[in-house]
Amino acid sequence: MIAAARKAARGLLHDFGEVEQLQVSLKGPADFVSTADRRAEETIRRELKKARPNYGFLLEERGAEEGKDSSNCWLVDPLDGTTNFLHGIPQFCISIALERDSRLLAGVIYDPVRDEMFWAEDGGGAYMNETRMRVAARRDPQDAVVVTGIPHRGRRGKEGYQEQLHAIMETVSGVRRFGSAALDLAWVAAGRFDGYWEQGLSPWDIAAGIVLVREAGGIASEVHGGSAMLKSGSVLCANPVMHGQLAEIFKRAAPTV
Figure 1 (cartoon, rainbow, N blue to C red):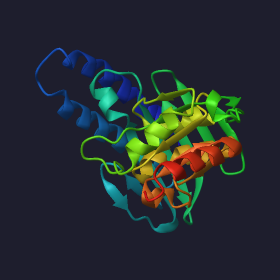
Figure 2: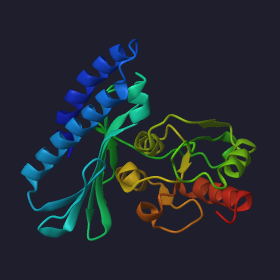
Figure 3: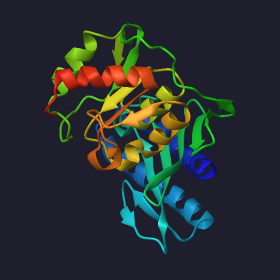
């Protein structure tokens, strides 16, 4: 997984340099970015298939591919933070997860701009490059900086979001919005953020990050409880104490969402 991410990242970094130049023209850089996205996905698919030829795939661009080994499935987002990439903003990543028998087993999130490789395996802890990661230890929401994704045009999850945001802003020290769900989760696992919530996501956006957060000592659930994050696209992550407090805030803010 790490090798596949690094190989795809070389092409993305080259394309990112090119797309920065495209911003000065009127020749729709969106098409260029979608090409870069597909190219990175194909590189990851090829490398993973070479290593585990019978595993299945759930790919952002190509969709589901059933493998001979029905127990194992790769969940791949070759470019999480596409809008950032499109605008020359260096906040994007590659996300790869392995699901075995409907259980998330391993996750890799790679930030090629900072050369930060976040990785974790069930029961083995979470790491950034070679350094062990732990979620932040803050227990009081008043001291917390949390990160979110704001529902925008064409995205699910708008219902109740304003109430959630208002309730959180009245409680925490700061709220951030960076534009890459996978990196947001990785940064929660690394202790940079105290919590993260978002709705309307796809499985490949969050699968690897959930593994990272859990292995770093955090809790991942749906915003209003439940564990079907990959199905619902709803996720709330934090350390065990902070998670409970944030969940209670959301319950009061928009209990019907």
